[in-house]
Length: 471
Image 1 (cartoon, rainbow, N blue to C red):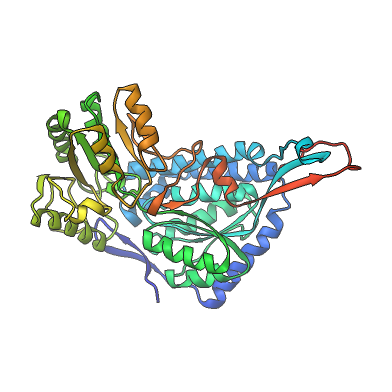
Image 2 (tube, rainbow, N blue to C red; image 1 turned 120 degrees about the horizontal axis):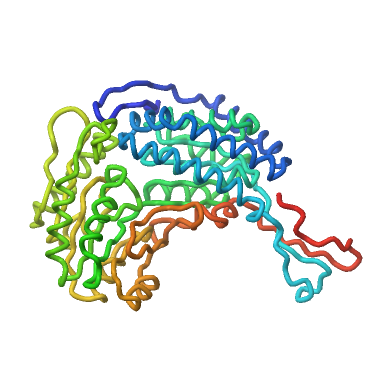
C-alpha cells in the first residue's frame, strides 16, 4: 500500500497517516466527479464566479491555519506558506473576474469563409486529472483548479503522498464555497493508480507538475488513450549576469531566487552564469549572502531556509554536491550535511564546475547554486541553453540591445530580465524541451482544457451575432 502521511520534515516525526482508497472507492470518486461535470457545465459563468470568489474569501479567512498545515507537511517557512495562500486567493479572484472575457465567443471573418456568421466558442471538456507535487502544495493545484472550474470542467486531484492534509482541505474549500459536490475531488491513492484513472473514459485530460520521469509516464498513458495533457516538469534555470548589471542587486535577488521554498522550486535559479568582468565581485557578494541565511525551524519568523521535504531529497542534494567536490569543484559556502533532527541543508555555492560533474547537467532540488564563469555573451547563451531543460531563465543587463537578444536567444518558456522568475495569473507559464509542454495561467491556461469549437452559420440563420454565449 502507498505510504500517505504527514511527516514533519523539521523533526522527521510522522503526524498523521491515511489509508489509500480501494478500487471501489476510487471508482466512486471518479463517478461523482463526472456527475458533477454534467451539473457544472450547465451553470453560468457568473454563478461559477460567485463560487470562486467565495473560495477566495475562505482562503483569506483561514490563511494562517492552512499555512501551518503546509509548513508542517513539507517544511516551507510559515511566512512563505502564508504568502502562498494569499497568492491562491488572488488567482481565484483573477479567474472569477476574467473568465467571462476568456470564454466569450470570438467572432471570425464570416465573409472570408462564406458564412453569415462564424465564430469560435470555448466549452469545457469534462473531468481533468491533476497530478500535483508537494513543493507548492496549494499554489500548483490552484493554478489548475481555478481556470478549470471556471471553464466548467471538474477536477480530480491526485496529490503527492506527503501532503494529504493540504489536498483534502482544498477539496473542502471548494465544497464550502458552493461548487457542486464532486466538482473538485481529492483521491488518496499512490502513483500506481494513475494509469487506471487516466484510462477511465470518464476522465478526459490530465495535467501534471512534477519530475521528468513522471511527465513521460503520464504522456505515455495519455498518448495511448488519446487524451490531452499539460506537463510542467523540472528546470535547471540559468541566471545570467553581464558586465552592465547592477551586481549588488543581482547578488541579492540571486540569493532569494536560489533559496525560495528552501531551494525546492522548478523555477528557482540554479545555474549562475556570470561574465568574467564581474565574476569575482558577484561571487563574493552572492556567497556572503547565502552564508548569512538562517536555517532552522520553519515556524520561526526569523528563519530564512527550512528543511528539505524528505530525507531522500536531502541525501540526493548532498550526493550531487559531493560528486562535484570529488571531481574538483570548489565550495564557497555550505556543502556540509548537518547532524540532528530534521532534513536541513545549508545554502551552498559551488564553482569550478565541469561537464563531468552531475551538477553541470542535473537539476539540484535544494538550496545549492552552481556558479559558472563566461567571457562573452555568446558563451553565456551557450551555457544557459546547454541543458535538456527550458522552464524559466533570468538575465541581468542594463544594455537594451542585450536585453532584446536575451529575450530571443534564451531557450525557455519564461525570460525575466533584471528580476526573479515567478508566476503570475496574468502571464502564461510553462516550459520547452524536457521541461514539458502546454501552458498554465492567463487565458491560455484556461483554454488548454476547453473544446475550441468552430461555429459556421450559413444563409437563412437568425441575425443575432456571436458573443452572447460565454460557456
